[in-house]
Image (cartoon, rainbow, N blue to C red; front, top):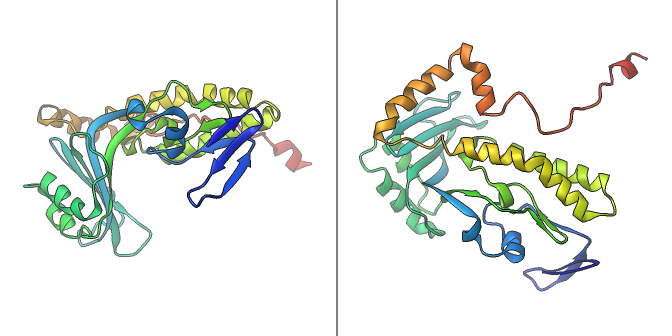
Length: 266
């Protein structure tokens, strides 16, 4: 990828080339666009001390309509319902040192070793882990001093990964795309001003949610009882406003849509 005053020249993996006025990297926590423009990944990562794995499983636990968590010191097993009858999604979150990409054939053994002696439905869920591989990665946030350089800007996990513990990564990424498009429309002939306006609007929002997400990883044994007590408390109806504040808030980073009531009545 080469930038100039007039645009960005991109060479694709198959050797073809194409020019663009601007380039937006929305290619995830391991962004290749970020690497090409800002440098190697390690300088931007904050590893939270955990790894994660995810794969579909048959709903043998009978928890079709329930999201269930089983938490032990330093590890957690979760089951999520899906829209496919008889199928759930197993998500594992466990303490681990930073690591690179693990070859797919080795992931089952790595995951089972991390959950040796675990209780609940965990052994049964691990038995359904596909031998051919599944999603596995470190729990990593991306923190950068700037989200744009020249004619290239980043959005979503590429510049501000929250991690899955925030439960807001996809929605914040979509909001970022909306705000970037809005900024480009407001500054049609000035990409630098558009990129700066987009980042100024979204960066404080992302930084706060990254901070909150770091407090939601499985606790060590000393903090597990406190974590369990707090979880039971915030799930009560009276604490619903607090829960909304932590997992989505009642405010939106997006602009308030115009009120068309009067126009509709006419």
